[in-house]
Image 1 (spheres, one colour):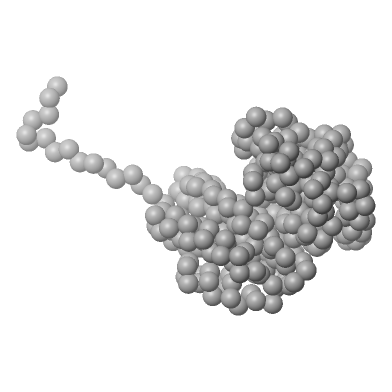
Image 2 (cartoon, rainbow, N blue to C red; image 1 turned 90 degrees about the vertical axis):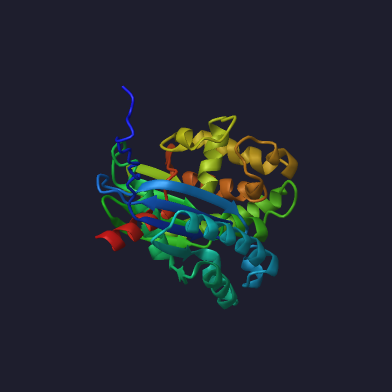
Length: 327
């Protein structure tokens, strides 16, 4: 059957819901998630997810200020994100900054640069809100397959969060140990020397013990790990040839696997770590410190396994932003 000249052919435009952009700016990485709120979906759907490893917190532990080079790298990534946000015609954007930005004396310079590029201010959240957002993002996708209460471990560049809860957060604590902070403070040789690892371990253990005084981790039935250190260690432990988030999300790794990966990473040179599949160049210098934090957490908790979640604080920021504008 052939359409006649009288037939009217109308292109029906694809229906689209409002879109929201969440940016999580940490000590090592800056990430963007754009979600779309559709009427037939309970949760917003992912449109795009981006990651840039910019090491904003380089030198912050020692000098308490952002370096010019770190700001330049971060602003370049934000310029990219601004273009992506414009292309997707986003309704609202929230820019959240965590550990590194809490610690610096030249925050105003950073805030001004962000506003010039995105037209929004920086929301510098405290450790408690960071922990709550991490928990919300982490447990949403694992709740149906694992038993509550959940203990969420979020190892960042400058801090680590311990969060315990069931349907909501009951206990939370943020401590100043992270892969960048521990590397800069202790693990400066290539590969790290034994005494450097011992000093880092002492520092890490003190912070973990401090956190566990506030968070009764023994009540947890499931331990969930989130963020780049955990997902990278999982990729190495699972011997993935190519990093695939579908293989990582919801995977379980054992204490023995974490112990082996941590030891191996700390014995490798930078070039050897760079050759490992699944390790991004921007994480090569700090992954040994991050793996050591994860190992010591599992050692001191006495847990046999950890569930890995690809969803974390970034997802929760986006979901809350969408809910605030559509609820």
